[in-house]
Image 1 (cartoon, rainbow, N blue to C red):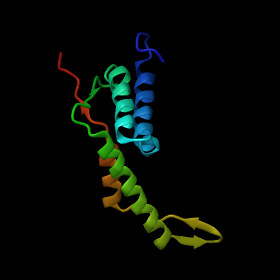
Image 2 (cartoon, helix red, strand yellow):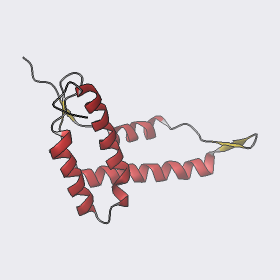
Image 3 (cartoon, rainbow, N blue to C red):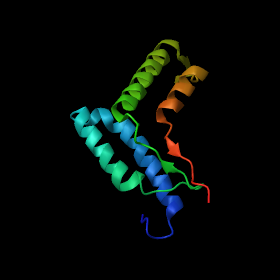
Image 4 (cartoon, rainbow, N blue to C red):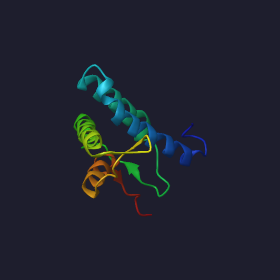
Length: 121
C-alpha cells in the first residue's frame, strides 16, 4: 500500500487491522516498554498519515496502548471463564454463550479507535 497513490481507502483498512493486531499482540512482547515503542513507531509512520473515508485521522496522543491491551486481555479472560462455566454442549458441538451487552460494550470501548473528525473546509 502506498499513501502517495490513490489507495487511501485500502490503506485505511490496513491501518485499522494493524492497530487491532497490535492490541492483540501486546502480551507477546518482552516488555510494555518494547510494545509501546513498536506502537509509537506505527503511530508515527502509519497511523498519523492515513485518513478515513470521511477525512478523520487517528487521535493517539492520549491513547494508553499498554492499558488498553491489558483491559482487552482481562475482558477476554473473563469471557473465556464464563464460556467454560456456562457454555452448552449440543450434539457434540460446544457452543459459546453470546456476549452480554455489558461485555460487548466493554470490548467495543477497548478496541474503539480514537479519531479526530475531519476539518471543516
